[in-house]
Length: 493
Image (cartoon, rainbow, N blue to C red; front, side, top):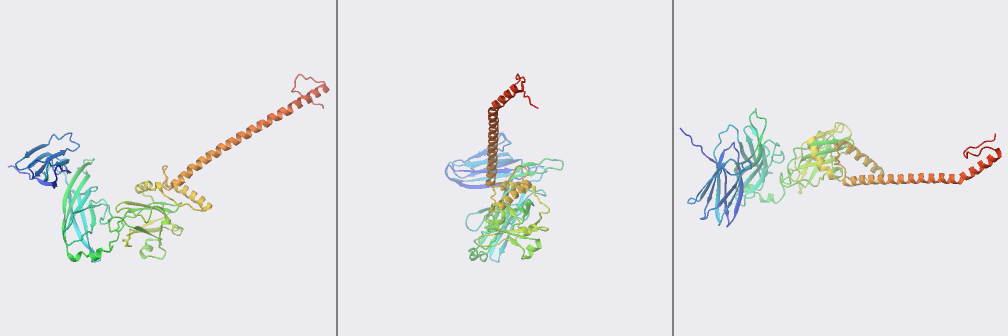
């Protein structure tokens, strides 16, 4: 008894080409899904379209490529091993071409990567509908992070809109690296049915059995349907859309990277928020500082809002694009740096003044230094061109230089100077040159003095030696002493 293995569709594309037009693309099917795949190209014109395929890198040539052309049915069939195949279709005349890729299930005990998803529609102030799209990539019972996941939304009007889903723990996403990719979509401007299709591609670490220690990285593409939703005409409130009602997304991952006791500096990091939830970028950040978390929660009078003058590195009024990593170095006021510690939180604000929800609370103390090695290495790269505002007065300048020296001694372990400005580095170079110049001048002056002293001694000897010799000769005659040795002098007693 024989069994028939049914092939399933893993890729499809239909395009209308102009004369001599070309369409290119890529299909990736890993060996856990199929050992061999079939490319089937349908063309409609009398002239045959040209299908070209490029084999995966591990195949020296397409030796296992088996193609057949049926000019009656106008079909091109090619069978090849699984892997990453690039293709191009060229048409000698205007016609529509359709490409279909089929794969037979592989006989393997491994688990393939699977993609699933869904969507949830909620409302903001009972006016604006907001769609949260999510996709989950798994391999057996393991999450598959690190893929590029896109969601294409097909609305009742207009062209499809594609958004990239993220697994960064910010915005619509809940936890970073859990294999669940999410994003908000709020361009629901027309009533009708919205369909959402998912696609994922990229490399992932394929986990073997328990006896295997090495993971093999494979390229994969997957597609899935997230679902559909009906937007009622009453839900598309155009009056509400005339105003900016969407606040920035909440910042969930505020983290203390390092505390610097000598200069009372704390370095923070978080994932940038957006202008409208997780779209674009916010207008500015508000950072609140309190003696404790309870003070921040109750908005105590002692809570302080930090301003740009408190920032050593970064700009509160220039947030990055949503999803990017923010690094900020702050100088904590003396009233907060004394005592048991302090607490911080941050929130994003958009151009319309809408404030996002406050971030998670973090605490720090200069009595117990903190360092997060991974983020600190990234922060050091960001702190190369920091502009530090220098004091005006001489005494403050001296304290400033000493303070900077302390900072460098504490946070720059490997010849790195992230908190020094280019101006300071040039000043340091100029000071070294000045010191060398002063040393040269000092050596020249000392040499001149030595030469002068030698000249004076010689002049003295030239002037006084003849006189001394004459006196000795006179004394020799009087004392009738032996004058054979000019350097002997008889002293009369």
